[in-house]
View 1 (spheres, protein in one colour):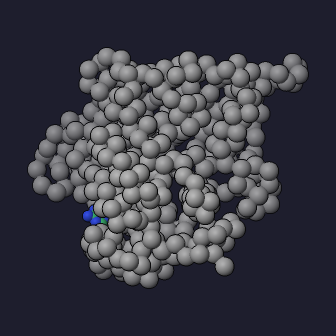
View 2 (view 1 turned 90 degrees about the vertical axis):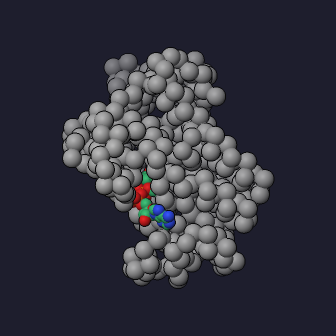
View 3 (view 1 turned 90 degrees about the horizontal axis):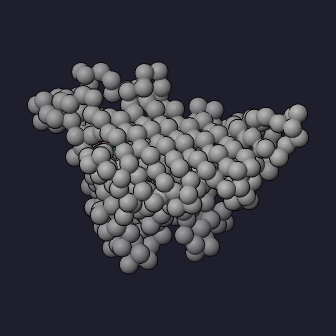
Length: 378
Ligand SMILES: NC(=O)c1ccc[n+]([C@@H]2O[C@H](COP(=O)([O-])OP(=O)(O)OC[C@H]3O[C@@H](n4cnc5c(N)ncnc54)[C@H](O)[C@@H]3O)[C@@H](O)[C@H]2O)c1
């Protein structure tokens, strides 16, 4: 019988749903020593929190996250609220000795992130950040191929994350749903929201980034603020493109925008090595494109690997070969890995310390965007 891990989740928005689904499903598919129990959901609006609790099966509701953290029957705090709240909640949860799962980006900046790392390490509590794309089976397969040396020396890393939902000048900033446009709540725009994912994957696949040079733009300079009712300057980056040099010598380009008309969540990366290349596309997430120069010449070409076989990462836990899984499963995989690490008393990546490296790259990118200089990653 798996041991219960009592979850107290803060925030019931997009990620609150994705995580609740993962906690509910994980023990149905993975054989684990721990079993998440949906003990409490915390949000400011009690009626909405109660409705969420009823939908997902949470046992209780809190409206003040401090009360949630003070509860003795809560083992793990899951932080699913806007970025400006991550630090304060994580510091309090660490002092209370709770296991902490925190949404990305870890913090508003690397100074906050460093405080959070120090707090969880001092308290000795298990911690993880939800950079979920690592657990898409095709992305994990890419990692396995790179680690096995299939690509050889890596020359290039190319990533984009494109959306188009903030083009309208009438779109307000701030408040529910639109906190991402408010720099006080988000910390940055596409850099912390979208590029952070690309950077986390890149650091995981290809090692550390040494230095960056970036170009950022805020296309709509003023928007009505939902919380103040006034038209206020927009402080986020609407678009960001940067060049990077990896510590292993690879050259990289990263681009993200919310102004690429027609694109909703086009996250792609391509890696070119001496022996082979790989490509991945979130819109076709169960496929990994692979080109191997060592193939017989006349048959050489890009293969599209349908990552659904039982010996592909995570796939043996799901259906039969050929049947696909989706976005939500990356969260199920992350919970499964986290619970397994907890049982083995090992860190589950990305830890707060791992996620701090992504935060440092984001900080360097934003600084370079302001100064137009190359910036060494701190
Ligand atoms: N891993 C991913 O792919 C991914 C995707 C989306 C969002 N995120 C991250 O998840 C976090 C939440 O984003 P989201 O898209 O779920 O946002 P959202 O706007 O859908 O939900 C935010 C939730 O926080 C709640 N909240 C705000 N202030 C609160 C307070 N004082 N006390 C309690 N609850 C409060 C809101 O009521 C809402 O339920 C952000 O850090 C974001 O960057 C990660």
